[in-house]
Length: 171
Figure (cartoon, rainbow, N blue to C red):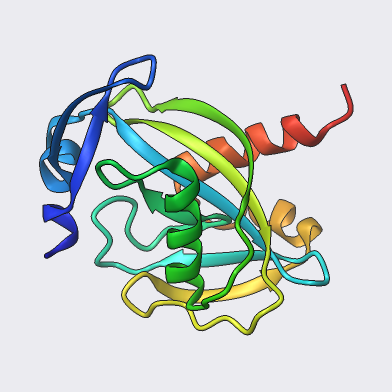
């Protein structure tokens, strides 16, 4: 089955399932669905950053500071976070990512999804999926901040990153 054929839960503004549709249809029609964002850091605290492949259905060739993706129909956010992190990092036996918060991403142009943000420490050697990741590195957080103005980033990841910084800042 291709990525466009994967079945997703379509959800309302309160994250309640209202239908199921193929991913390609959900994207084409701007149907709200669910996604996970996992910040992966290595044992030294560096952030896994990558550039998406040119063949991705959304945001091809852009940089991202999260691994993750869509939540499949009937799948929990927690299960999707672990599955997506292991798939994109190319590892198995990763600790279960820690849930941090959830928000509704909406770019105002037909792209909207409930977004659950997680964090995980990956002390394993990574072998990212060639179909998903064109380039990758673990970067110190200060370098990620510096690169925000130099590289083109996926807009939903950028939104999640800004919310993550606010979530971690002392109140």
